[in-house]
Amino acid sequence: MCVGAFPNNSASGVAVSGSYAYLVGDFYGLTIIDVSDPTNPIAVGRYYTHEGAYDVAVRGDYAYLASSSMGFLVIDVSDPTRPVRVGGTSPFASMRSLVTAWPYALVTELDAGVEIFDVSNPTAPTHVGRYSSVEYKLNVAVSGNYACLADDWNGLLLVDFSNPASPIRVNGFNTIGTSYGLTMGDNYVYVAAGESGFHVVDISDPAQPVRTGRFDTVHHARDTVLVSNLAYVTRGCT
Figure 1 (cartoon, rainbow, N blue to C red):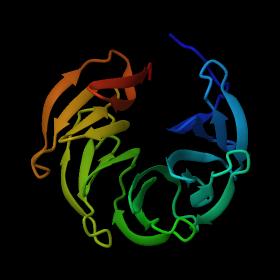
Figure 2 (figure 1 turned 135 degrees about the vertical axis):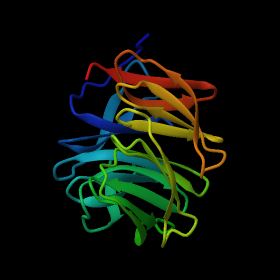
Figure 3 (figure 1 turned 30 degrees about the vertical axis):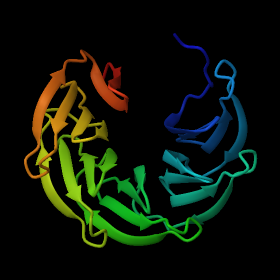
Figure 4 (figure 1 turned 120 degrees about the vertical axis):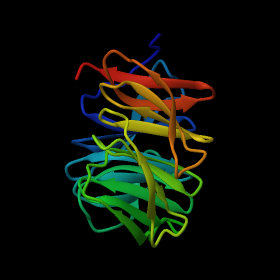
């Protein structure tokens, strides 16, 4: 049952911290929404980015944005009504998704790979490494020293970034469909794989990933999130 909604027709990413939701989209950048009353979400602050942003992660007083034209941005959101940019990098390729794995942030790029930034000082993020790849990266999740990439028609890629200056591909897994979204929990990766549905992959041995389950979502599986022992999957017609 839907208890509330915030009107927006270009949202591409969201993060929640405390009583606030942080929404990014193609045209406007970052919108901060007070969700203390879920039935009446209210926008309280905005930070505009040229050509918008695609993904967001929040840690403490900072929001981290993947922007298509402005690169990797760090926004101080300690005052939700007045978000201020305090750090960032020059644009690389078009950045699409990101995840934080303290003290690092991993950001995917279209047709380029994954950039790794040290964000231990959020006001001065430092580029420390790159996993280069020409494949079309759609999403990234992290568990321990391993990053798992949703790699379009190539399925999944597992990358060891224990040495962030020199990340190494460990293995891959073919989901027999377009890998769009994923999440990681314990020794498993949960994958929304387009027309082939929802997959569960055991990565307890990262060198030998094994599919342990699959669910036919009928329509294309687009993204997934894990809450306790439940996986929530979004789906669409194409």
